[in-house]
Image 1 (cartoon, rainbow, N blue to C red):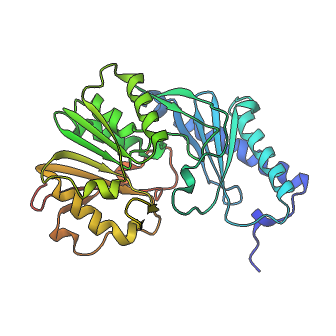
Image 2 (cartoon, rainbow, N blue to C red):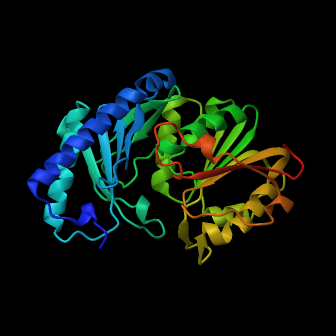
Image 3 (tube, helix red, strand yellow):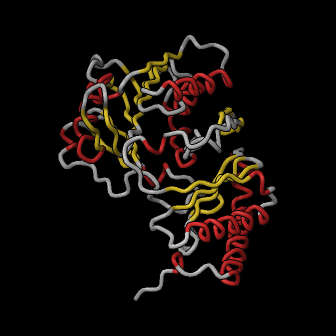
Length: 330
């Protein structure tokens, strides 16, 4: 039988050894990234990305805080003992990075369906403001499984800022609107941000006002994205950002959305809405996602996944990303 250390007993000696391994690794990782962190002027980054298979954690630093997520793929034989082990590992990581233990936020990530990952898991109201690319963003490390800022899309956001100058930008499945803020900072002539959640749209507005007092270039739309895009006029946007969920249920349209099954239809709608020189930035985080055959008849497709994943991510399959244009456009 294959040995599975993640399921083994929780004897204190074994856990103590794992704590030493983890502490050494996160300390070394941050030292290795330090010059890059200063050059990029970022305050939020990943310091550990499941580097050691027996310790399946993702550890992100948000300035003086740590956000630690366990990637759980099994049911622990003893939940209480398992959480004790996780607590010891969290303490070891915090000590190695000189972060007080009370500044550690721990989550458990398991396979989700639909929008479960976006649901509220606590009611602390915790908020802090962090900086990235010279911009400010509100994050909440306590109340949701995700924090409000997907760190793995840092290079994609920067690219959107570069592309946005003078363009009409549409941000779909917008979450907390970081792509919209980057587009505005890049000189977009107008930005339309679409999401179904009032919670996320309020957060988008907060992020906007953290950076720009003028809201005249930014329109927020509460709508089911799948319904919204069917009403788009041809050539109505010059830059579209679409980072859809892997799976969701559309109550308005009484149907489900599966990114693998439905992305050809989605891309057809969005390419139709692009101006002749327009660009669609399409991304998703389904690990086994494959772009459908035959899409080259619909559009010119460029895979930029490797360029879109930042240096602090060991997992180079955290997401996939493409630039899509009208056929014949480079």
